[in-house]
Length: 240
Image (cartoon, rainbow, N blue to C red):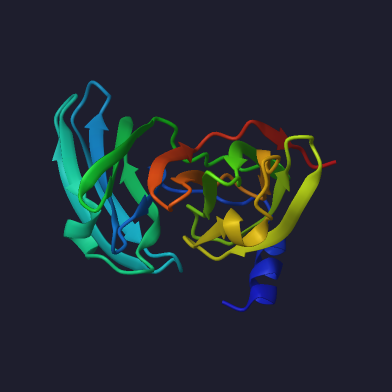
């Protein structure tokens, strides 16, 4: 989508984002070395059903699977079993359900388990604020590196800005971004910042609608150590 047209669409759409069912959005990766498994847990007391949709980094729907869950039953899906592996197979995994669910995530590197995460926050549908703010820590030192992902769970564009601060609170980088529907973007801090002992601290992200943020933490040799999924904003800024 043309970026100018998408930005105008955000202005026209304003705060009118809505979805018809409960949705849970998480970040996944199914690349050459990395894979993700999703554990879909029915946390409600009633039977429910779901559809799991997998999108690539550009927001294209790759495939979808559906299932039924008895109370507190769980299903296990390895993303590569659904869509395979490719360089652009990372970004949004979207679960649509009328029920209450907990989403477990397992990250694998070279087929070995590496990290686990659990998500209980559904995608916020009442989008009335001007900006939603997300925060996480990073390190870009001689022995640590960080990558940050921003994921748009909606079928409308989302704009935002990415800020990086060093340990002393100095802003060392900022850039605007615009996400098309279901699109994701990746900030590789090794490419954006100098490597220094003081190059660690806070990342701040603001977006015009709720998004999913993920932090990937690497050792100096590039080995993935952990993936942190952030689905809850810490602050929202009202329209004046």
